[in-house]
Image: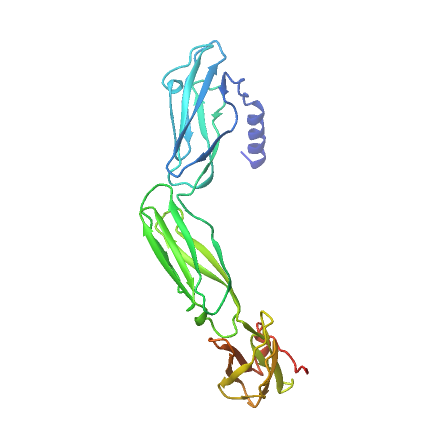
Length: 336
């Protein structure tokens, strides 16, 4: 038989196939049923009524059963008599699932003229392990402060909880886990004194791992902003090739109070400082001159009246890679 003959035979077969007879069973409730929200170990039962609208008995059998679903009831225990009804209970188990879930059951009958009957359901399973937010902010932090941000974890199932920090932290962050039973606290402390000179703000990722199978890890975020009573503008000074060899650093009091620069020292070679102003003022300017012929880095350490902690400002000359340092702001010389 050639290919053309096979296609004609298939077409004739489809055209002459007997259609299914009208449904002999009605189901209540009909269509997809929303089971609502379930806990991580919760089960829920949905009752169905199958009504036989025909004059002959009819039997049901299960053809396909979705994971976590069981069926029981008189509708599966024997034929449904003519014009009678029988109940069927669909039970779903939420364990090992999380989030939106869709399930379906396919039922057949002993009548070859009948099609299949379906029981579609949907639900949302709550996660076992939750955290009270994934973002914290330390706000504006002074040099003497050590603020603490706390994340709280809890398992709804009541099972023991284990939480650990999975990746190394920057030197200015300390995180401690305190766990008891199904609950745990992650306390993170910011140490401003360990922040690299020139850094004024940050958003740090703290990756934690847990023993909850369906919630094995969380990404937590910590935002912070440092302030010093005397601000340096810019926070980092960069000299670039083909630009002036002298730049001016502006120092400004946050509260507008006059201050005086007690000492200014350069830790590193390649730069020289201009004279310090002897008069207190809410805003001061300090000249910095480059003397290095090649790449050079240093740290400017400034001490002020009434302030115990010094202010540190990075200074650098990077003639070949300056364009890659996007965090540096250059301020040209400014006259009073």
